[in-house]
Amino acid sequence: MAIPWLLALKAIPWGDVMEHAPSVLKAARKLMDRQGAEPAPSSTTDLDVAGEALPSLGELKNRLIATQVQLDRQAQTQAEMAQTLAELAEQNARLVSAVETLRQRTRLLLWVLAVMVLLVVWVVWR
Image (cartoon, rainbow, N blue to C red):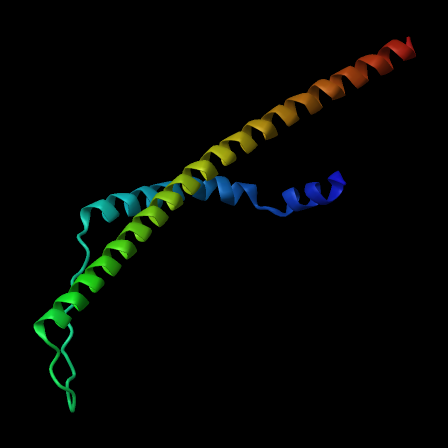
């Protein structure tokens, strides 16, 4: 059961992941900063009324309100997505740090195990 997980973990280029984690975190933070700083772009569209009657002022106002509500929802969704991306980048950085700590501890335990095996062999040999 553990062998497929070990194979999957060995297949991941952890060096590359750890190398790029800070840049991903910086990019996510820049995205969050830019998200709060940039106003939503306003687009103007020409009405194509060829063969149609011009809409009334009330209809235009209703369309404008509906469009503004939709833009507000999209801006909120985009801000939430940027926040989620920043959180994921921070979690990734913490995960990389934890993996590096585990790798160091594993190396230390292997060295301790090797020394203990040598001691046992030495005691048995005597």
